[in-house]
Length: 202
Image 1: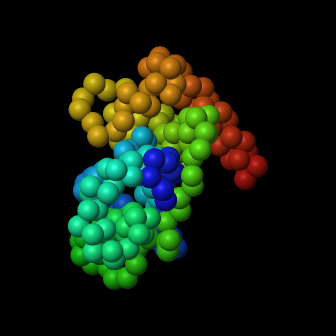
Image 2: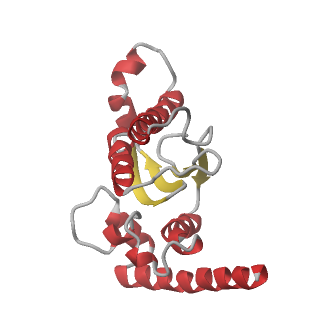
């Protein structure tokens, strides 16, 4: 990962396990993400699904990262890119430890090596944000993504304080009305795909 770039970050649980079993799990994961990742990246969208997660983030500028990692960089221990990856590892490891303690399990929880895809174009950034917000419909957890509690969509259309880069995301879609319209349009497509798949299975 490099400073100033957008990334789609995602990962899933090992095997058929779940990352999130109860509401406290979802809330604690977001708390840890805020603690470890918000100092190094701006959050543009997210969605937590029982067995996986998605985030769209913008890595902060090199100047901001140099300030945050000043002590570690002064010791010359690791390059900036390695420090960024380590920050994500700390986030996921801290969550795993708490999850294991609460649910009386041992061992790794996440699939090895979280995935990260560079987002270099505005159109692709829009599509990834739509994909993330529509994930509950894709996986048939909710018929209407608006009702899903563990994504950033509700924060986007709210006026409550949030860490999410709400204004920047809305501007990507021109305005709030078009933001909502494009999501609803994508929902219809996703629902149709799910129905076709179900018919094929039957």
